[in-house]
Image (cartoon, rainbow, N blue to C red):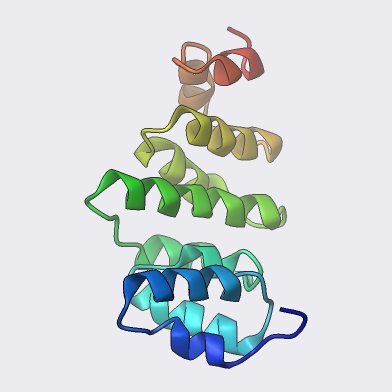
Length: 148
């Protein structure tokens, strides 16, 4: 949409999960006070980290860590952790040390593990144990990036 439409916030609360998901995807493309407010409300429920990519403010890394509820199913967990890394990638000023390690440690996806490790490494926030572990990672990208 060429302009932000406030009706998307209502659709982000829709009873139908597919409608909610599409609305949240559309909302995530906008930086707007109403989207941020919605993001904070949804975080209290443990969801919608994607909304923070364009609506992040300093200190949100602690809010994210405190408010996250990890989904029990693998798909939901994968996308939640990938969205955490997207937030960190979009905000280089952010302290990635705890949130990045959290995403790295909780993901079962080799690509996402690499992206989390890369963010941490780029910011000199990767702990030594993580750097060593990446040298022996199952994923080629991690091994190459950290000198296998």
